[in-house]
Length: 538
Image (cartoon, rainbow, N blue to C red; front, top):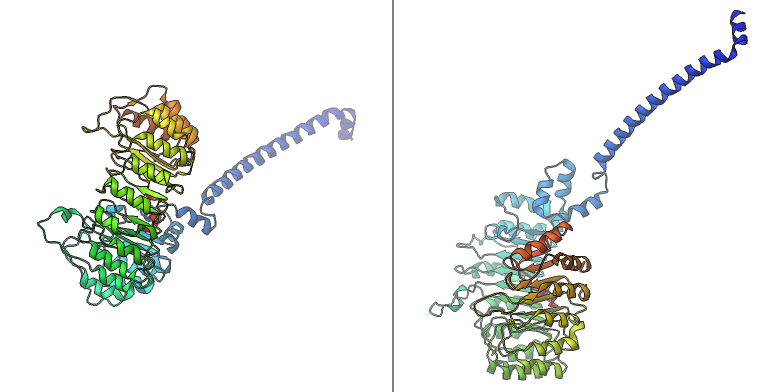
């Protein structure tokens, strides 16, 4: 009764006490719940952080790992079991480079490598480069038996002083599409080649990479370290032949090639200095599918070139860089050739205003997509402007370096016509034989490129630090080309303060590898050749 009376007599006081106690309990529970929820959130976030990457589907993880070079994959294999399994997935080892001098992996133990072929590469392997120490009968056997989809094989004998024993070699990859052989100066390969001739019938691309050091030594006897005629007899389906710097190659070898390669579409003889051109008449007569003829630094002569039947050919890509053909020969040659899509004539004194005028007047350049006319001392820049006014919009590549009379005003006028240019090489490097008396306002050239050449991928500016004119406001123009030319992957400049300014500008925008120096990089239009991917080596 006392309690009831107390409650009834002072109900508000009792309610106040009960309410406060309830509120205290609610607050305590809320604090506990908040502490628990915070801890749960922390645990969930920790679990999420731990499994964010590794929880991705294997297909996605493999796609991410596929962007890593093999040396990085080997490092990733040390992180955890999952990454080790991913790094060893054969899908990531379709292309394998094993020559350290060309940024490949270094294999210390051939026996360990032999065991890897089956479970690391297996049927996924499509391309492999082997240095001399890994070109053994056992390794070639294993590649033939386990890597059935191998299509591209490079055998580098260039450092060989002695060959391995190949008497037991009775198996070789037989589904090859491309075979590249790097020759040695002192080793004859016929003993090895006899073992593999019968496996080469599927070849479409043959590359023989020689050494050209002895080609100028007239007193030295020239040895044929590999038999081109026997290779040709076993490879009836060749589309591309690249004989680079093979000093014993002459017109007799070209005659042999012409006699049986009816599917030949590209013949590259760069730095084969003994080739004079006397074989080209039969070459064009028999190889009706020949479209690309590359003759850089060969010994071709006027009389031999004039006898060939260029009218009946379908050649549309021609490289005669650093050859001694005369103006009259080029006038005759180009008047009889079909339309050209690729033309390289740098350091060719016979390429004059008259020759370029003939090409323009006869409509030989209506399909032109790339031209290299660097160091053509007898060609005036007015002729080039006429060419660009007519065909500049269709050009994808232009190289015009080495003219010391060219200023920024020429390029400002010329760049207006280069709306679709992807590769551009301009300027003149400093030398005692080419003194530049004027300063080049580089800002105006960069601004013109930013405004007109937004498809630009590669740009090389050869003027040296002393020739370029720039100031503290140049960063604005560097910003413009960086922002507007989004496809730019290579900007090559002469070493110096301006190079450092441009490099730091691109690096701040997280474009680390775009700006390079002329001492280590050189830009060329050769990537615009139709057969460029088939001609690449090293």
